[in-house]
Length: 171
Image 1 (cartoon, helix red, strand yellow):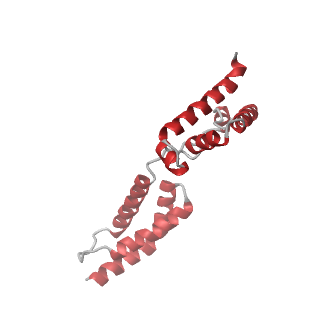
Image 2 (spheres, rainbow, N blue to C red; image 1 turned 90 degrees about the horizontal axis):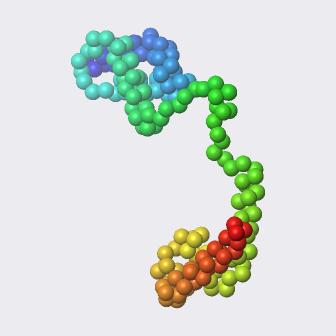
Image 3 (tube, one colour; image 1 turned 120 degrees about the vertical axis):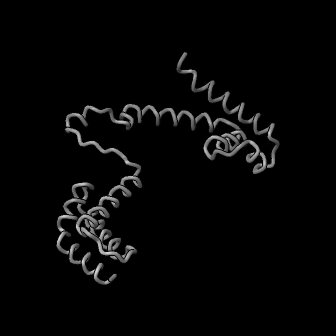
């Protein structure tokens, strides 16, 4: 009985494989993925439990394929992809910084580095550990063997120096 069922499914799969592939390629808009899902359809059909004969093997295969597509869409978070005209896409603002902004950011960063170079070595080290390595004040104190109050004091001094120097252009 199971062998007859499997044989019927295999025959139906062989007859409708191309139609299944076209169906999946249309649904997925990806020929390679459609080929994988076509094969997966056969694997699921061939290994499905149950001994009863299937009334409509073609419909059964297409139902499995549809379920695979639905499962795939759920897995990818049902993201929406829109196809738009090139002119429309060109009108959307680019999230990347402009060349002018890149120059400005590099200049500001160079100013920050100069300010940090002017700090005492310990003050600079505390600032770098806190702002760039994202350590907590307690972690910095433990690492450097100093008190948390000393860490806070160094951070206040560093931030005051940065504010003093960086804010001087805005006056």
